[in-house]
Image (cartoon, rainbow, N blue to C red):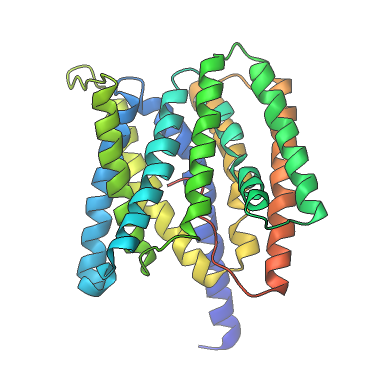
Length: 315
C-alpha cells in the first residue's frame, strides 16, 4: 500500500471521527431533553453514567488487562473529583436546566466553557494573549445577552442560572484535570470519572427527592437514554480520544463551536424549539468568541511544547 493511499485513508478516518464528535455530542442536548420528559434528570444521569462506566471499564479490562487500572490513591481521587465536577455538577445540572429552557439555548450557554477556562488561567497567574482576552470578552458578551434576554423567548431565568452553574462546574473540572494527579490510561480514567459521576448523581437525586416511576417512563425516553449511554458516552468519547492521537489538536478542538450549532438545529427540527433572532445573534457572538480563543491558544501551543487537550465539553 503506497503512502498516498495510507494518508488518504487516515484523512478519511479523521473526518469520520470528527463528524461523530460534531453530531453525536451536539445531539446529546436533544437526547437529554427527551429523556427528562418522563425520567427524573439526576437519576437518568446516574443510570447513564453508571451503565457507561461498567461497559467501558469492562472493555478496557478485557483489552488492556489490569495494567490499565494501575494507579495510586491520589490518581484515583483525582479522577473521582473530576468526574463529580464534570458529570454530577456539570452534566447533571444541564439536565435539570433543560426542564426550564430549550436544549438549543442550553447548548449555546454551555459553549462558554472555553471562556471560563481562560478566566481560571488568569486567576492562576497564567496570562493569556491579547487575542485570547478579546475572544473572552466577545464570548461573554454573547453569554450576557442570552442570559439577560433568554434568547428572546419566554425562558425561565431559573434554568439560565442553573446552566451557567453547570458550565462553571464543568470548567472547574476541566481546569483541574490537567493539574492534579490522574490515571495514566485515559479510558480507565474516564471509566472512573463516569462511575464517580453516576454515584454522585444517584445520591444527589435521592437527596432532592427524585423518584423513578417505571410505569410513567416512556419508550421514547428509554431510547434516548440508551442513545446517551452508547453514542454520547462511549462512541463519542472513543472517537474523541482517537482523534487526540491522530489529528491536529487545532482541528479536534473545533467541536467546541460546532456542537452548539448542531444542538440548536436538532432542537428546532425534532422538538420545534423556537430559534429567535436574538438567540441566533447572541449564539453567533459566543461561537465567534470561542473560536477566537480556541484558535489563538492552539496556535500558541503549537509554537511551544505540546500540551494535553482539555476535557471534552460533553460525554
